[in-house]
Image (cartoon, rainbow, N blue to C red; front, top):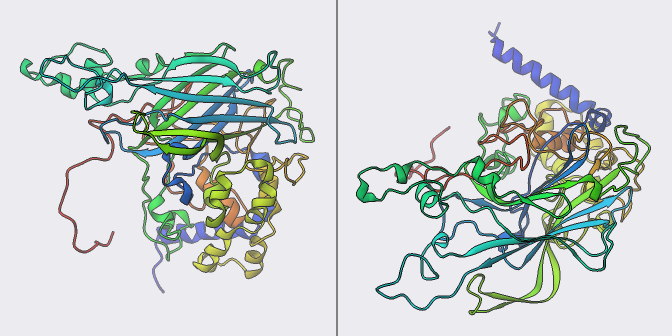
Length: 524
């Protein structure tokens, strides 16, 4: 008799559990909403049109209410991703000429009821050509942080928003400083004035090796808004984790992602976003700005009610025509014409894991109001199921052909999960890619999307990649597929702004010691 190890027995048992979950997946999917699992995911460079416009590249959107009292709404928009901390003369700058907007609808409708807009302005005073007696600083410097250039933002509640008592946009904050980049120890001392500077001639390397950019410094850039809210924007750690190397080799998942099947590649999965920074906007809004008379039935979630629902999504817009303008020393461009939407994001993995390539650019340029018409079939008949079948995943797990046929669609269970099983019509103007949250109860995905809150400070409550891919491919969010990487490379904060500080340009990130290239790729 062949000897069977305890490890092999454990893997067989795990495969049986996975098979059972997939076979019963469509029944279990109804528990997705009731279980209230919080999760996280992203859409880095997910569409062809976004490759040439990183300032419009939304990656993640978060929206949740403060636990217990629900008296605050937290909104986070991440964009301009995959920035190596030490890369480039100018680092990661705020983007001039774009409008970054949080859209909030209420109830069963996706019609905007409140829109918060953030716009950035970088300024640099022109200087004459350099001469032999010039002092340090000014427009001729090679590095932005020495030029004296400024980065500020303006925050408005857009005209037509609920409860506005005046015509036009309402400015909530103007010329608010943006958090600067975490370049390294000398910048901390010479530019940010965080400590005394000692030059090379001092004989000590402390000013070149010991960084002073810390959480109190980051917190000093949290800005107050006139309505009682707060905002911070700037460079932060990318909060997303994904074994992207495997995903983009045609969903080449490892055994840990697939219940231990022997035909999968060996672990571990690696988080390709570790060490990267991106640009983030984090807002804390008082709930009185959204429900002035109080949240309906606060503290009680009513399954047949929609009056306390918020429907949130984020968009990025710019003027339609961009013309080369050498007099604009910041962007080199001049915008003209109407503002047009060039990016959007809400539910994790929607445009990256459900919408087909030829419609991903359409997604970026349209609103959720028409998502049923534009992308209904992408949800009802998920291509990822067909791909998993073609790769032999279902056969490896022993899933019956009848169960696979059911998973191919139509998949109303996915739509019901997006709509929290509430009485929301599956029609344009009601169902679309938005984060739906019930402000009357604590936020837990898919009821909102919260940052952090996991078993450890660098963990989220649930791995959204696993939750969503398991829902799509197995019909069961708890099937345990595509677990990949489940920890962040930095700890999240347990308070506003929740984001982890940026990786330092000098001593952190991806740069390292070069080694000769392997002529042949070694076996892992």
